[in-house]
Image 1 (cartoon, rainbow, N blue to C red):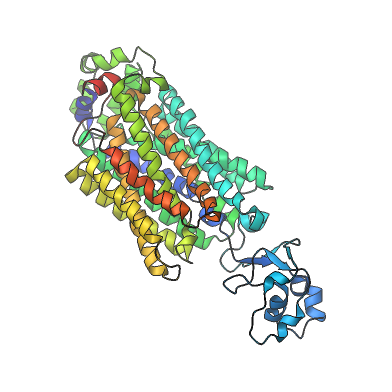
Image 2 (image 1 turned 90 degrees about the horizontal axis):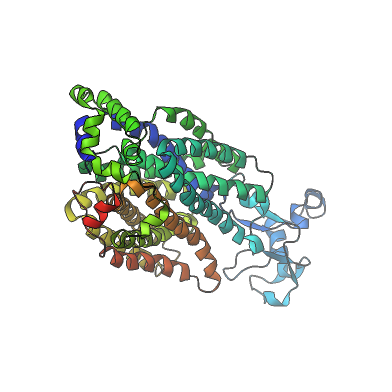
Length: 533
């Protein structure tokens, strides 16, 4: 914890930290677009079966020219329980007798029907093309949309484990730069994917790198910031995510064709890769991994940029070794992910933090990945939710500073669960009320995630922070991968996924009480710090 003293000398929140954030925030905002991209690239437009007498230009233009499209649709497509044309079935033969029923509705089960063997006709009024219309992911193939979303989240799960370990071994900056390039390449290639299988593979690869871009960007900022400003900085990072969510709504409104939108959110990562060369590696990580010379060089850079000329002149190896003797001795021992579970206090913290992160992520993506469930205008919903989460995260900062880490998380988690469960009892016709409750839930879950991120950073030592962050991200990605798959349960009970989305945060809120309070406490550097505090 002596690093806090060194950080105070060189400036714990100054011009350097502002520049570091300016370099990382653009990639932070854009990576969120990738995470939520399937809200738009995999949107399901209105659709019906292709009909020979209506959609074949030659037939509809000659033989049936005296009949309107509505009439041809009535005799070719059966009606569902809401008296709207079925999306997945058509009559085997045109039912001309339906034209003479004078408004009555016959028993459709008595008529011969067949699936859409000739394909579908899609409503292109909202989107020019999506992956759903490209590869016909409707009816019997509709579950494949959830598979795409889950594969991206599974990629984040795998990436959090692999890159979390590599970040602790080779540094935050190097792994971040590799992942920025990986995301740029995989995202750009996905825009030109010729088949659904190749698209899924590239999205999985994008997910692997996206999680490292988020976690390493965060560590390169947080590990350079003084203890008193950590909550504010982590909240600013979370607000960058919300700005990215809002930005995605605007981009999707402008670019309605999925390949174009995919390209627009991927190409900027080539620029982010080039600009990341000016980032400064975490001196805290360099010192605790037995690289004091490089750490000292980083501290001098920070002192220079923050205008601390006296500190720049007095920083030397003798002073560094005297201030961080304990950390340098601990650095002689190589760490593995298993060290997170060897000591009782750290093991308890990791298990509880992972479960809370898992339970928070399920309702977060459950709401965000099902925007069509809350209203017809998903562009507006995306922008509203993004803007709302910015306010909610700022509110979380105020509550964190006054109520502490534990009570803040418990409060917001309970509100998330209650708002989701209440929405189950609101009829589909009351769209305004449904959107309002969903917005409350979205705001509260964003505040809960922000609070958890602050608490997580303060409970884990620097020596294992990237590994712990990777493990936390794994738990988060398990929840994120599970969230879209839970929607497949609607075939058994339409409200079942929403019951799970609502119960999980309430249950997790109870477990938060078992974690220690960390408000105004300095960051921990070694495992010994955790066990003795």
